[in-house]
Length: 285
Ligand SMILES: [Zn+2]
Image (cartoon, rainbow, N blue to C red; front, top):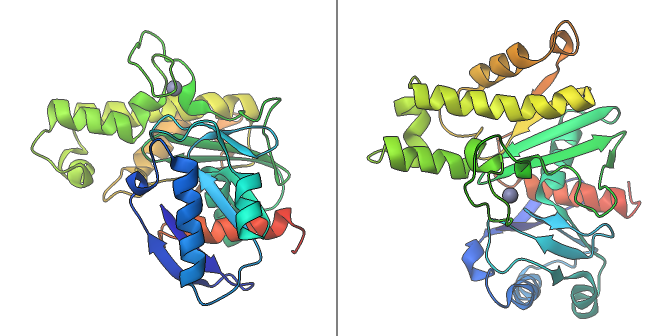
């Protein structure tokens, strides 16, 4: 978990990183509140709002973290009221992908159209924006491409379903490949050492197939590709793009796809994105 303070001109300060396990577990909501309160005491400035991104589904009103398949104890956390009562400033929560996307949209000066973000880390983070507005759906849980069922696969997902796509195309699937085929390789070197193997080619092909599913439905203006897996050393980015293009219907939308590679220059981009999101939501921009 990364956190920091961000000034009005988007300068990050007081950056910190902690292990998720320090927060996760039975008392995750209390742990998080205690930690943020302690952090605010340590930093030498007064903050005007707090925005937090979670790798989770949230309720429609964005007050409850509903389900977090890949972190224990982060389900049904009602956060806004207790946080605002104790910290005394507006508190906002959103999907972590929303924060990353706001950073990227600001960085690449994109505002309008249909935008799809794929942030592939442990899971398959997905977000859809139309003219700057996140598509949340009736219950708040739209845009969960990582939890659609894949044909003929039945492994258990952290969300409770079986055969979810993110088990095969994100970090979880990559780790499984490593264990089975490349047990002597560190996960961080898997693309460098094994990028030319049939297993990695198939992994990239499967990733492309899942991404193409949503592209085919939405015909987006821009496609943002990011997240920890895509940012790994020697990740075959061009191969992924080529596979997406070759699997997309021609001539349209296949010939008009516009890819943006997420900015990996700073691991705290999501923190800056959270500040951009907060200022937009609170009407200060
Ligand atoms: Zn799932």
